[in-house]
Image (tube, protein in one colour):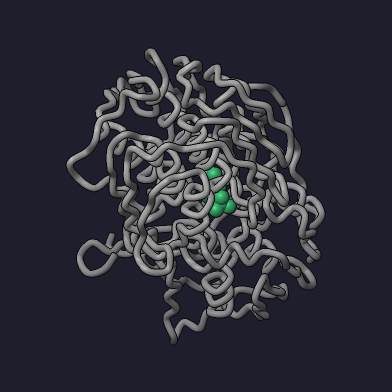
Amino acid sequence: MSGANRLDWIVGAGKPLTGRIRVPGDKSVSHRAIMLASLAEGVSRIDGFLEGEDTRATAAVFQKLGVKIEAPSPQSRIVHGVGLRGLRASAEALDCGNAGTGMRLLTGVLAGQAFDSVLVGDASLSKRPMRRVIDPLAMMGANIDSEAGGLPPLRIRGGSALHGIDYTLPVASAQVKSAVLLAGLYADGDITVREPHPTRDYTERMLSAFGWPIEFSPGLARVRGGADGRHALRATDVSVPADFSSAAFFLVAASVIPGSDLTLEAVGMNPRRTGLLQALRMMGADIVETDARHQGGEAVADLHVRATQLRGIDVPEDIVPDMIDEFPALFVAAACATGSTRVSGAAELRVKESDRLATMSSALRALGIRVDEVDDGATIHGGRFVVDPAKPVVIDSHGDHRIAMASAIAGQRCEGEFTIGDIANVATSFPGFDTLAQRVGFALRDASA
Ligand code: S3P
């Protein structure tokens, strides 16, 4: 974003974080709930829906495809499912906004339709790799054109006869796995997806909750192909847990801001999402889970965090996929720790909403932290965030929501103030982050105020 629409924050040393908060609903679950409820027979209610730009874009796409979706109150949706074969062609391109999850999962759904579709996204999404979904879907018989290099827009030809596949993912990606499984709803024959490392299993769990025949265990999913019309998705109510990835910013902030004592309520605790909790505990964090329970089939717990001095670690490569969205926050924790923290096996970070290894390394360097960046990771040397009042610092978020929020945490430990540029994309995943952060003690204000 630029010019008159650009939003910036000014951050500086904040107060200890205190209180009890609940972060918004899970982005991954919200996308999938809209998709499966739209393709189901009957009316589903979604509660705890993330009112983020990404998930609203997915709902708007299904509305364009002919699905009636009502919003009786914030964070609730009533979806009038049209059944697997009830979607209608859209005369316009379908805009996924900033959402990689939206575009990749929709590609799987649309590959099985009788009509053509075009998927487009914003400037950031238009630079993200789609070959990873096009290739396995083409092996199933789909017909999808992209721009050079496998980039969006994607033109998906309808009327293709899809068939089953036994596919081993070349990279650990829940989005690719999900695209293949969703295309399977329209395929002749079974679909098996094998993963090099287990990734989040929300698509599998939700397909099962909507009554689709599926078997899954960590690293493997097998769905019955739906071409024979013998199976249907049945409308089901979905209760969306609070997003661990949004809670992550507060877990790190309360761990590193001295004197903090903060509780995060009803956080989704799916083990494929909570790698950061393991990493922070290895670093010495004081985070206690209480009231562990289930909400709509998903594990949730309250997380009570108290500040401690963290120590640098080597992040085990086998937990990288379980914390794939949490590295911007982890980098800030590492900068506040004693000693060095080494991240490796994390090359996927280069193809997120920004190249997160590069954007976080340069953000920390601008604040006086030494970072050695390598192809698949970085070593972050703990230190102090300092800015020279004579030389104003502007951290460029590169329009990446998680870079903006991670930099805001760094600000709370910084002796001077600095600006975080281009923060509008925070609304893609965490609308209201600034207000919630201010309420618990962050020093953060709108630069235009
Ligand atoms: C997601 C999967 C992950 C993650 C993204 C959400 C999902 O992406 O980074 O924020 O909902 O399936 P990849 O599948 O590209 O790893």
